[in-house]
Each structure stands twice: as structure tokens, then as C-alpha cells.
Image (cartoon, rainbow, N blue to C red; front, side, top):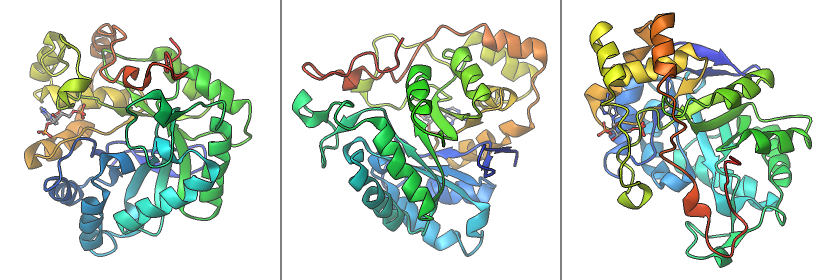
Length: 314
Ligand code: A2P
């Protein structure tokens, strides 16, 4: 499996299994299929509310059929635990649920803070301004977690270039990863260039368009990535699936990618995207699809009366 070496020297496998939206009763089996098929990177988060089931699979497989060192496991700090004193307890809860003694990567899930215990805010009263808990203070606690050996690497997710610049101005130890929505409709070239300059590796979420999102999270007319004509034509040309074209594109751009599936055949074939080599002209055809379209636009955090607006700073 292709890997990328992060600025801290750790190596992240290029393709991981996404577990956002993987249903209870399915996710444990999906992770088992993934590990058995050769995945060595599993992407988790406390807010996905499925870490206990994933932990049961890890207990059966990791450290037994596959050594712990071979598997890269990411999880994410939920928005209700940004207070510095809440970071290590939140990470320890995730470790307990996942049945691990350390993570490979822990990410600040969003540049958004909620009051402790809030899963999702129903009004601005549930939210906390980032002027009360600056991201830089949460970041210091993330660094402490790494120093304590609870995670090998630390990073962020859903951070714009502006938010990265703010954080970079306040720390001598910047995030090694920024996990963001990335796909041909949202190629984020300037963010990618900035991150490369600062040795911040990008991981792509929603690489297939996340069409299994809850209805409330969807817009009326969303473009389909998997049905796109250019992608379909390339799938024919390279004798592969549209999903494999979409996944392979990230590897050509130097990004890791975490397609989600709970179907064994798709889990297997998504991993085989690493064998597809798109030529320069076809990579350009894919780049030309960019329309800066977000499936996950973050407006669900823009509650009236809160100071969260335009969280991607664009
Ligand atoms: P399923 O889990 O039923 O396989 P994303 O990774 O962008 O969040 O997209 C996940 C969605 O894409 C899920 O609905 C998932 O369905 C579907 N999916 C995953 N792999 C494939 C594939 N190879 N072909 C078509 N759809 C796929």
C-alpha cells in the first residue's frame, strides 16, 4: 500500500476506509472486510457514534491477525471538547471505545466549539465562540496528548487556508494533516498548494460525493460525481469503476483518501484504485470539472445568534 510520509516522519497509508455514515450493525463488519482486504488505514471519529462497534472489530483483528504497528487509525475531537482540559479525556474515551492504547492521528474535527455534552446544537446557546476558546489553545492540548503518547500525530479537519495561517502564526508545531472535503467538483487547488508549501498533508473526505448523507444535509439538486460523464468515460477507458477513477485521482495529487462503504465488493474494489494510473491529459480532464461545489457546506453550524459564519472563509 502506497504511503505518504508526514512532516513528523510518520507514514499515512494512501487509501483508508471512511466510517462516517456507516450504520450500527454494519460498520464493524465493514472494518473487518477492509482489514482482511488489505486496508491499513481506518478513519474514525467520536461523532460518528460507531467507535464501540469498530473497537470490537479491532479487538478481534488488530494485534492478532495484523499487528498494531501495521494499521493507521485516525479519530477526531468533537466540537464539545475544545476546552483544553477536555481534550485528553475525549481522546481517552475514544481509545476506550476503539480498544486501543494509542491513535496514529487525532484531528480537531471542526474549527467550531460547542458547550460540553452538546452533540449537535439546537440554538446558538449551545455554541461557544472561538474567541472564548481559541483554536490555538485546543491545539496546545492536542500537542500534550501527543507528548503523552496517546496519539502519534496530530492535525486538524475542515480548516481553511486562513484558519491554518492563524494557527501557524501561533504555534511552532503546526498540524501535519488537514482532512477536508476534496473531489473533482471541489479540487481546492489553492489550499492544496498552501498545504504542500507548509508540509501539511491533505486527506480527502467525501471523495465519492457522500450521497448517503442525511436528507437534511443535502441540497435540492446536487451534482453526482459517480454519474459524471467524464468520469464514466474514463472508467470505460481504464477498464475500472467510476469510484476507482475518483479515488485514484487523489493519489495522483499526493493526497490520501477515505472512501466509505459497507459493501464488501466495493470496499475491495475501492482499495484497488491504487493500481490505476491516469495519464496527464486525463488528470487535466478531471481537473476541468472543478466548480467549487461543497457537499458538506458547513452552513449547519451557522445558527442565528452565533458568531459562526462562512466557516470556510470564502
Ligand atoms: P455503500 O456504503 O452502500 O457502499 P463518500 O466516501 O464520498 O462518503 O461516499 C460514500 C457513498 O458512496 C456511500 O453511499 C457508499 O455506499 C457509496 N460507495 C462507496 N463505494 C462505492 C463504489 N465503489 N461504487 C458506488 N458507490 C460507492
